[in-house]
Image (cartoon, helix red, strand yellow):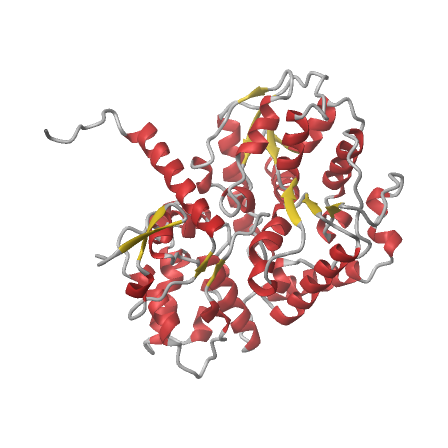
Amino acid sequence: MVELLSYKKFYDEPLKKDEPVSEEITKDCYTVFACRHKFCREVCPVYQELRNESYTSYGFHAALLSVSRGIESLGNMKETITYCLECGACELRCPNTLFGGDFYKRRTTTVDLVRKIRRDLIAENEKPNNWGEVEKKIDQYKKYYNSSPEEIRQWAKDLEIPTTGDTILFVDYFTAFQETVTVRTAAQILMKAGVKFGVIERPGLTLGELYETNFDEWLAHAKETIEALKSAGAKTVIVVNPHEYVYLTREYPKYMGSLPFNVIFITEYVAKLIENKKIKLTTEVDIKATYHDPCALNKFSGIWESPRKIIESIPGLEYTDEDPVSQWYNCCGNGIASFKELHPELSYRIGTSRLRKAADLGVQYLLLGCPHCKDQLSEVQTKSKINVEPIHLLEIVAKAMGLEV
Amino acid sequence: MVRHAIIKYGHFMVDPDDMQDVIRQQELNEEEIERIVKYRWMYLDWMHKRFADKVVKPPE
C-alpha cells in the first residue's frame, strides 16, 4: 500500500486579508527564511528562466512572513504566488527536507503552502491576472464530468472493458478526453498481457485547478472517486496519470485516511509484467532516446527506477540516461495545476529549455511517463521546431510488443 | 542541537519532547520518511560522483 503522508494541519486554517497570520504559519515561514543556502533557487525551473528570487520557495515564505509582520498585505501576494509550477523541486532540495526532514519529523512543504495561499486569496476575491483561463478550464472539466457514460468511455469504444473488477485502470478526465492515446495504449498493453481489469464509469474530478480554488468541492469529488472505486470492487488501482497518482497516494490520505485498495503506477505494473514475462518485447525499436522524469513521479513519488527498467528491456533502443537527481532541475513547463493557464509564455520557455537539454544529448526521441508532459512538450515541439520528438514510453512498449495503437 | 535522539523506523530521530516549544513536528508517515532518506543517499551519491575527486580519510 503506497501512502506518502506529509501533512501540516495548521495550513487548513484560512489566511484572511484583515486578520493576523497565525503563530504556527509565521514560524513555518521562519524555518525557510532563516536559511541562507537558498538551494531552492537553482533547482527551480521558474528561477532558471527569470532569475527572480521572489518566485522561489524562499521568496514565497519571506513574502508571507512580511505579511505576518504587517510589512506587506496578503492581497499583494496574488501575482507572486502564481509563479510556481508546484513541481516540488524546491521542497525536496531544501535542507529542511533532505537533511533534516526525517530527523526532526518536519519538512519544507512549499507546494502545500502555495496551494493554500492561492486558495485563500481566491476565497478573499483576490484573483490574479489570467485567472479567467483557470475558471474556463474548471468549467470545461465540469462539462466532461457531466457527459454521458458513453462519451466518458469514448476512448475505449471498441475495447470492451468492464466497469467492475479486482483491478481497475483509473482514467481521469484529462486522459479520457484529451490525451487519449496514453490510456488507450495502457489498456491495450494490459489486455495483451492477459490482465483482467475494469474502468469505473464516472470518477469525480481530480483537477489540480479545483484543488487550489475550491477545496470543499474538490474533496466531495475525491470522496465520490473513492466510493466509485470501492463499489467497482477495486483491490488494485492502476494509475496512468502521475498527477492523479499524487492525489491518490499523497493528498487523499490526508483528508480521508488510508484508502481501501492498493494504488500502483502504470510503469511499476508494466515493469513487473515484463519481469514476470507476461509482457514479451520482441519487436526491435531502432531509435535513439532519452527519458524525461515527470515531476509528479520523480520529485513527489520516488518513481524513477521502473521507467528505466522498462526502457532497458526494449530491444533495439539506444538509450542515453539523464539521472533522476539532475532532473530535479527539469520540468516540462506544464506544472501540476494552474501554471500553464496563468503563464503560457513562461510555460513555453520552460518547455523549450527542457527539449533543448534533450536535443543536446543527440537523441531523436524524448520518452515520457506523463500525459501532461506529452501534451505540453508536443505543443512546444510543434511551435519551437526543436528536433526531438516527445513520445509516451507506453507507446514504445506497445511497438516493442508488436501492438498497433 | 538536540538533547536526545531516539531510533524510530530504523533511523535516528529527535526526541519528540524536544519539538514542543518552538517548532512542532508534523504528520510524516514511515513511507515518507523512508523516501526522504532514500533521496538523501541518492543526492549524496550524485554529489560525490560529480564533485569529489578523492575521499579524505579521517586523521589517525
